[in-house]
Length: 148
Ligand SMILES: [Zn+2]
Ligand SMILES: [Zn+2]
Image 1 (cartoon, rainbow, N blue to C red):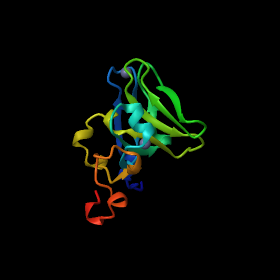
Image 2 (tube, rainbow, N blue to C red):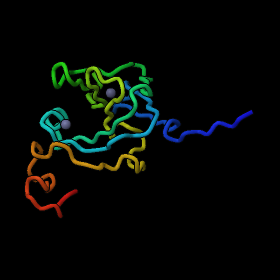
Image 3 (cartoon, rainbow, N blue to C red):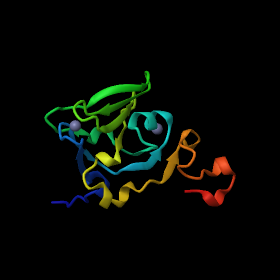
């Protein structure tokens, strides 16, 4: 009987959910491009200077809580929708219309995210739109030594 190698990226499994527990989910596969985003939509929606995102294979996403899927809202009409809990308002996910490969997950919705080095953000995103005090941005200051 051949022994098939187990691919660690495909066996990674994480769970998460909203603050009240109505929305629960699991994702499998390797996190992709963890980053923080201070764009106008992330900031306004979150009531926060930025949101902390990572991508997962859409095929590995399952909604496991009693409420099923989150409520979806199109932040970019026809392009992107964001999922949140209709009970407690926690932000959970983002999907680009037509993208069958990836789902964006808010790292703060994942169980145990503080202890998971896979989510350390690699890049800030759209800093020109972000709160000006948030982080020095090389493309704003022209000083590459201030790169995050
Ligand atoms: Zn909730
Ligand atoms: Zn954003």
